[in-house]
Image (cartoon, rainbow over all chains, first blue to last red; front, side, top):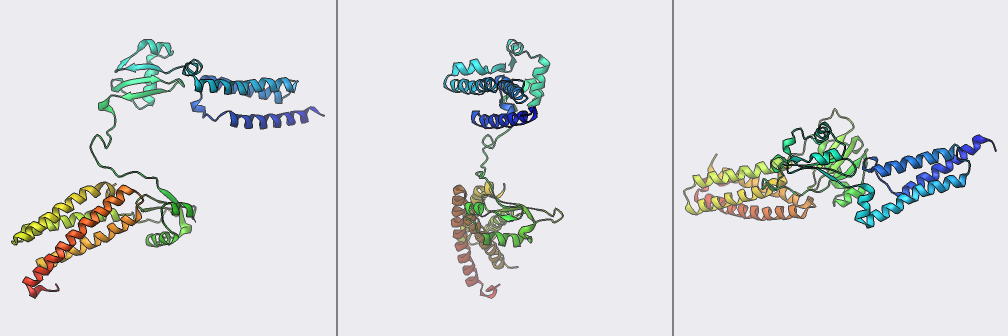
Length: 286
Length: 68
């Protein structure tokens, strides 16, 4: 058998083994890899290359080496899952870099970081002012995680005591001009409903690239033809405005009438509407 | 425009809003929203009844504006 055929056969064999086994061993993104994963990956790659090019003559020896490099990490990973101490030994621990707003210089030095590098890492997290940082640590993977001081963290609706509508994931009902029946059914809608909505918007299914229905049943369409301007769904905003106008009307009737009972009724109705507007606001105005 | 016809207009827009709300109550899959819609529908129908009564009272008092 000529050498080149041997190389092809060995390469194909190695490719199949490695791809299949790496599937089994685990799936970690490059960004989540720790340094030891990285080293293992390089070692496996080197062994595979050496075997497939025939530099390691004895196929069995090569495979033994490969098996150890592939399977031993599986074993250590398993142990690391079971034992925290072993995990820390294998992958290292996170190190506190900034605590209570003060830089821990010793820890920074220990991580072989200069002050400039620390600042650069913070800037990557969009923190340009070290005074804003309450707490920062370096993860075992080398990433820096930052917790800002409470007064510098973004405001959440809860802090503002705002009522917000519950979030629900939208369903994609049209993709590339094709209706996806499954997502329609998930939302409790039918093809009939969809065709009515499309007719309202004045487009055909074939012209829709993406169509999504949000939880409250509003349809958003993106067309192939970007020159066509679609009307934005304004029904909710309109509904809110209508109710608000009714509330104002009732209030003015209450002021205008001389009939005491009618005045009271109007005022009560206006109050009720006001309360209702408050309740519907997060749903209608998002 | 007479007061009676203004009140009638408000009644009409309230009825429209009620219909739209009913539609949304049917469409939404979020339970919290369904409850909010159902609650508002109830309140609005109460107001509608009140307005209808008021309109018939006004028409009784001033029959010359009936139908406007």
